[in-house]
Image (cartoon, rainbow, N blue to C red; front, side, top):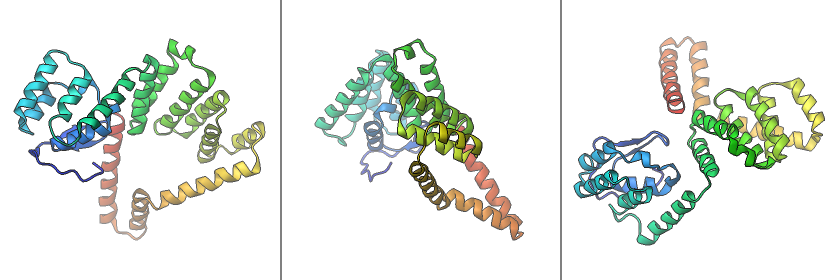
Length: 278
């Protein structure tokens, strides 16, 4: 959960799983912490009879489950559910709860278009790239998109490109970054465009676009320097080390270790793919 949480209540034998954030919850205190720090990811859809049953049977909070059941049957609003949960433990003060409710009011007062964008941004935040790309495309293809100015539209295309790096690949994302920059004229978008061109090895296009956009030698050196930094960081990652070990096992003839590590990596990648592509 990212922080030490003192739990005085019943610990669940079967944790509640939040798929979006890949988080398991074992106690009412953890649940309160999760709600408070991920409020943009909490929707009415969460509160169903299965959730109430978990509160009742796993956390043994009979009265709280009854209250949630009343709210569910009366089709209560999201704030009612959240308050019900946060008041189940003394984890947050009344002042902190009121502060969270103000944030919820701000989220609730967003325009329909901004709510859709917030939903897509939340998917990006939690690495649900397929869902994020779908939501951004829905916005960009909607009638509401006509209300956006060039910068706003370009920023949405930029975010779609970020999602597409992880779904359809760098080449397609590069096209989106170009489209985004031609609209928002944002230096960060331009930088991402050239990152994508370099990493997808589109050398001829890179040279042509460098001339067309008047890219200075200093700006190109900055891009190359940042890429070198990212590559160094990647080489120090656990995944990169696993691939190195895999190649070492193969080259040295350690077949048992090779197949064991291969199986572990495939299982890990399958889990990540299923999470991001439900």
